[in-house]
Image (cartoon, rainbow, N blue to C red; front, side, top):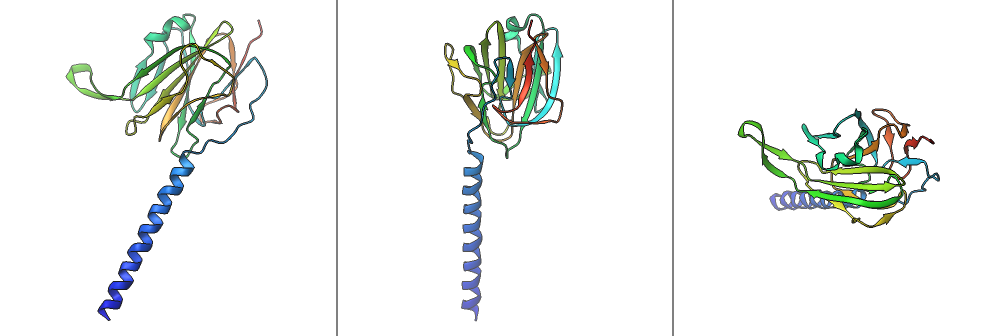
Amino acid sequence: MVILLKTKKIKTYQKLFAVGVCSILLFTVYFYRDPDRTIPNGNNLCLSPADGNILYIKEYNGIPEIYKDGNKYILKDINNYYKNGSYVIGIFMSPFDVHVNRAPVGGEVVYTKHIDGGFYPAFMGDLTKKNERNIIIIKNGSDYIGVIQVAGILARRTICNVNVGDYVAMGQRIGRINLGSQTALILPKGKYILKVKKNERVYAGKTVIAERINN
């Protein structure tokens, strides 16, 4: 009788282990999915670079900023592209969203920069955890459109698949971010009409974030 009970327990553990392994494998496949998208037509359109929800929309006359995990990042390095001001649209990507990033516009990649995550000295000698991030600037006509990939604080993995000098098509895959993270879109102020609002659901290469004003 004792032997039978032990055998049943072992079989139960084996079943639970098998279910756990299968669940992890299924989630991994689901997480790394990369579905094809039908890209809208229109040279005056700016598409979402990421799947997720609009976390914030901010307007700047000075240096643009982004926010993630309680940290504020002042984008001084790219301020010269937005001397007349900018709009910054933050998109929250949950672990269940497609994590492939796409080009919001077509054009030439004129700037890329990777910033490692980690602990860095902050005010009063404290140590603050900074998120890994990539900065990508695409020149479309006379406009400079920015895409900022910001990794989650636990999984510091941002992947950029483009380099300076590359030409990308609107909706083209340009990278990915793993686990919960954020992608921010930067538009030059006064040149685009925003088509989205806070908390709205958007999809990379599919949702129109803004439309250029024809001057």
